[in-house]
Structure formats: structure tokens, C-alpha cells
Amino acid sequence: MKGSQGIAISVEESKNEDQVEKSQRPKCLLTPSLLSKKLLCPAFVSKPYMAEPRELRQQFGILTRMSIIKTIMALTRKGYRFMQDEEPSGQFTGTVDLVFESPDGHPTKVEVKSSKFLKQLQIVQSILYHEIGDKIVVASFNEILEPCDWLIEPVKSTAAELNQFLQEYPQQATQIYIPHRDLCERCENAECSRRVRAMQRDHQE
Ligand code: SF4
Picture 1 (tube, rainbow, N blue to C red):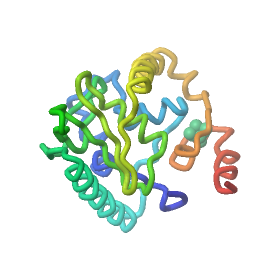
Picture 2: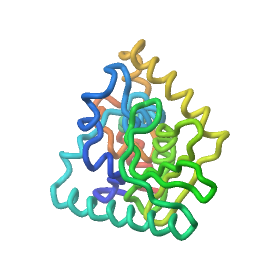
Picture 3: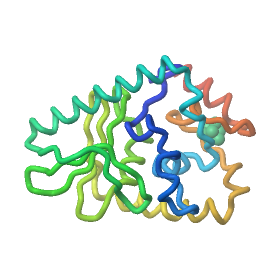
Picture 4: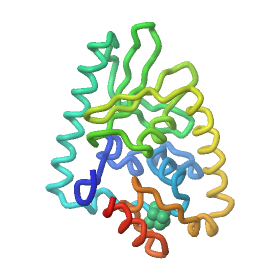
């Protein structure tokens, strides 16, 4: 989704993840929500979700809920058993939206998004909730994906390395601009020289 419709959110983000988990989180560890964005562009700066108009947030809250219900129905039809919502998951101390048991008995964690189709950013974020032995799935309104094992480990290891890098080189990181279509529209880095160009390009496509 683009423009003012471009806020694809998860249940977690709709509760403002950065606030919710503040108390339990080691100071040096970024949330999966923020770390996934910095994995695509280290200089990314979050635009606060609460700064969006209330009417828009309300409607996205409803859309997220619809996405959750659709995901539960789709996975139940495939033989998964719903266990619970919102469970802490992964080395980055995130909270995943839904937990199921797969038909072959594996815990399956599902990150749910309100966008119509999945974006790269959402797939990266979902991988940060993965735990060894569990399956991880990301769902949007019209798509469900289980990221491949060959993608999961490189994303998790790069994320851990980037988290460390951001502590060691905070100043340099604020100037590493790598435009990405899932990000620039939601970024508040006023110093970024690539921002206007990237947004113009995305709107032309
Ligand atoms: S606007 Fe600049 S800093 Fe923000 S995500 Fe795009 S390239 Fe990165």
C-alpha cells in the first residue's frame, strides 16, 4: 500500500512495540520491528505510528484484526491448531502475533500484517521472531509465507551483527543511506540526501 495507505502494521506495531517491550529489553538490543528496518537501511529513523491521524489508525486496527481472523481460518483449514496470541519469541525479544501447532506437531509462530500482499521488510521482520525448532510464518491479508531455512539463518546472523555494529558505529550508521521502497515513505531521517529522490522514484513506478 502507498501514500497515506502505506502503513502496513502488525498487531504488535499497532500497540507500539517499542513501548510495550521497553521494560524487559536489554538496552543494547533493538526490537525486531526497528532492527528489520535498519537491516534494509541502517540510517532509517522511525516515524511514530501515533503521529498518524487517529481515523487512519482506527481503520488499520480493524484491517489488522481482519487479517488475523483470515490467517487463523486459512491455517485451521490446512490442519494447524490455534494455540494462543502474542507470545515472546526469538533472540531479539519480540512478541509474535499468533502461535499454532502444525499438523506434524511443531510450534508454528505467525506474524500478521495488515497489508494486502507481503513486503520484503515484513518477511525480514518475521524471521527475527524465529526460534530453533519452531516454524515461522508471515501472513498478510492475501498471502501467507513460510520463509525458507536457507534465508532464516543469514538474516538472523546479520541482524545480530548489525545490532552490535549500530552500538559500535552509531554516528557512521546514521549516514548509511540505502533507499528501499518499503521504507523511505515511513522514514524521518531529515538529513538523508536520498529521501526525496527515492520517494519520487517509488511514486513514478
Ligand atoms: S529516507 Fe534515507 S535514511 Fe530513510 S530509509 Fe530512505 S534512504 Fe534510508
